[in-house]
Amino acid sequence: MRVIGGELRGKRLIAPKDESVRPTTDRVKESMFNLIYDYIDEDTVVYDLFSGTGGLGIEALSRGAAKVFFCDKSRESYNITKQNINDCRLKDRSKLVFGNYKKALAEFEDKADLVFLDPPYGLDLWKTCTDELIAQDKLNEDAVIVMEHGVENKLTDLHKDLSLIKERKYGAIAISIYCYSTLSEEE
Image (tube, rainbow, N blue to C red; front, side, top):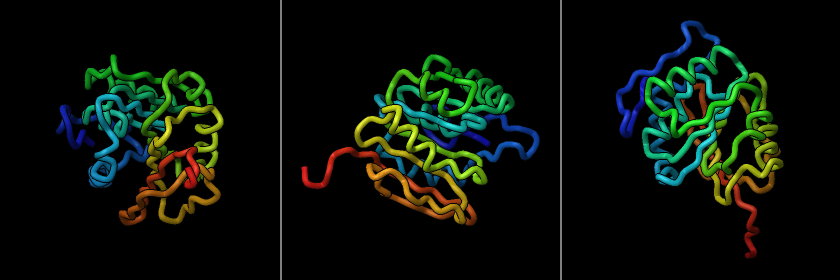
């Protein structure tokens, strides 16, 4: 597992030795970042929920994002993310919270422009998480939410202010990208 692009391109990241965490593969990560290239700049605030190894958030920082807020409720994932942030010397542009996403969101000071949402597929948390992001008012207007899920996971009944803008499938993995907007089409 490595950083695909940006200032840290080629930097190796540590991953768990077992199958307890499912890091996004380099191939899928590269495709994902090609899809969201235009949404990352020096002002972009990112949330990496269910961070696992921190790979997605670190990739965003490598590509110029201003700050990334990471969270995970697994002690092992938290420790791996922390070590990867430190090894990449990104501590000054990162905040890492141990705990579930609801607790973490309450501790994130800035609203997000970009959210990576990659929960364990079996828990079906995409709707719950996006509803919580909106309920806690944690998204800037036109924020982008990148959801990684199994192709068999159907993202249904998502909040009315979320619109699907891109979707790709990579074998058994799907990437669905939504935009958050509170502006009605009549405005």
